[in-house]
Length: 422
Image (tube, rainbow, N blue to C red; front, side, top):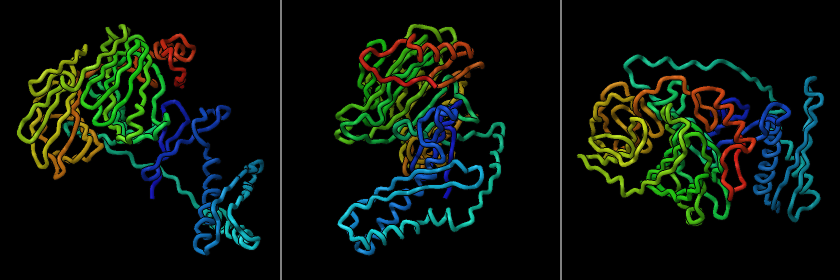
């Protein structure tokens, strides 16, 4: 089994721990240089001991038919002598159930036989640290495949851009595949509290479910599958994205794409705006074995109704099983992101992005292929991305962050919840 740990947010200590399909955040206290968004490594270590004891007791009681209803473990540590090689944990058990004194003593003895306790006290643990072999740089002319990075933003997303090997594709500076996820009814789990943007445009496109968009222009828009929702941040806008009550109640899966596009430099400080384009404005074009919707720009001789100030392309394509399609030639920098299914040619799995370097013919696998094509004219540096802000200078980024945290930035007046800039 392999556990991976990666930095959650650039410039912060916060880490994302990926264990199979599960994610845990870890962090340090503010006094130690962190932002207190998760337990620190010592807490996780101690919690492993307590959790293992609880599970061991429950399994033992079930096997021996002991009427143990519940186990609560309270664990505290004394690390005052850790530097001298002594790390002390004190576990206090609360055993709930109609238990005899003999059964309680029996369970107490078993608690110290849990695998993690024995691992710590009876085994020699060796940790071998080495450098991971870096992937070879892409061969010129060969297509680049970007692997998704899992992130937990209240629900699971796959992040494609920015990536180490490819910061952006045309003006597309940020690409997330959200979900699919369901949310607890009557809760705010998964809601994205209000946060700011400058210098970019956001586009939300859903495959299923719905979201409720609110912004500082007074927009209140329900976002549904097939519609395009374009928000130009310009000199500054704040917005929230929440899960509607009916979607929670009916346990409808929410899934879709969230992208950011860099605004042209001469419009980076323009007035913010929001435009909603309903799904009926994006009729599918049928070609043999494929359905195509052009969402931004022009593709397959179709031009989107969405007005964007720089040349770009964003399209949704659905290929029938084993069918092929030759993508039109383009002078733009393009990539395809495979959301579902598989491609035999080029070989691509769901969740991967391929940055195109030449003309491309795609062939779907036996399960078909659902992918997004995106790109546009290449954007020269400098382009700086920090948190939710995009700018051409570090001074502008610093000003935006200070303005947001100090309250000198537009905020939703009817929503007290907001995310501080790190």
